[in-house]
Length: 391
Image (cartoon, rainbow, N blue to C red; front, side):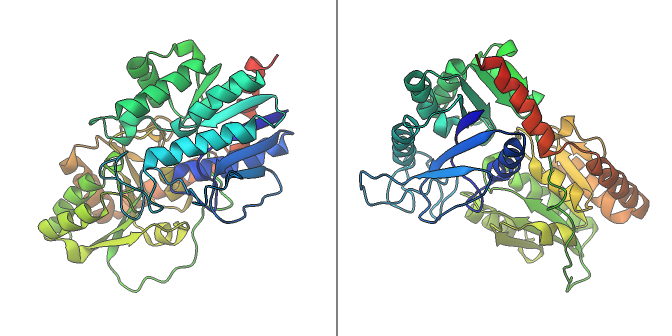
């Protein structure tokens, strides 16, 4: 089986969970006998793996400007998504349009059995290639426009592309039942067309690493893009309440995004900036998990939430929002509505002040993650779904 796959990032070039997903998924897919050709935006650097053929849409039409597509985050931010310019001077939608144009040109020359697209930035090319190559189209939706905007002012242009891709696909994969319900209710996609394949964890990679703590303060950790979707503003509100009870706590925020400066200002306005540390984006978050006493994922709308699994694998007690996909598959964690800041603070305080609760949750969650599904499970389930649409 040869799969032509389209996505907008692949390690080491990644901005979030999709890169982590694609690395684990495609590696195991190849071990099960699937050949993969992956078309991604141009990075300017060579990316080589022995289990996947990666083609970058660099454009032999010689436009002369590399397009490193980084949706939802850039050095200048996307406060006005779709209108502000990227670091290369192109608008965000121009980069998406150019990537899809090149993906069609490149993909139309490749012999394959089916096409698999990841998220809306690749859907136009996937639809075109389905018609050109006359091959079935499978799409995976890792996050929809309502998720990314926190259900506030979703972009109608992006919504239209998402809906068209979902309708044109022969089969749709989502990463949680939470996400599937949204596609049925918000986009009108037939339920029988959507299949749920939950995410997995690479336990060989995510484990505690030796890190020296220079301070005796307790550490509460947030990892994620600094966007409205991830709920970091609620994290800061909870931090304020926690510090009123326990002064010797430090709140570490790992990630970057368009809300970075507003969140820094909010920490100042709350009077807690001396206890909040913004460390920016870091591709290796294991050192932060290794010093954390509590991990918090307060997402407003999270299709899955791989960071929660990563923290559990690194032996950290986890608090997740109920508005997430991971909350439906993990038992040994604390769950809270993202908007209930006082309850979130109470749960953080409980884990920091009551050692028996902290120890029990940490031990049980670590046992649970050791038995959790692997990327081999994800690859096997997707192969069975591929067979549903293949002749």
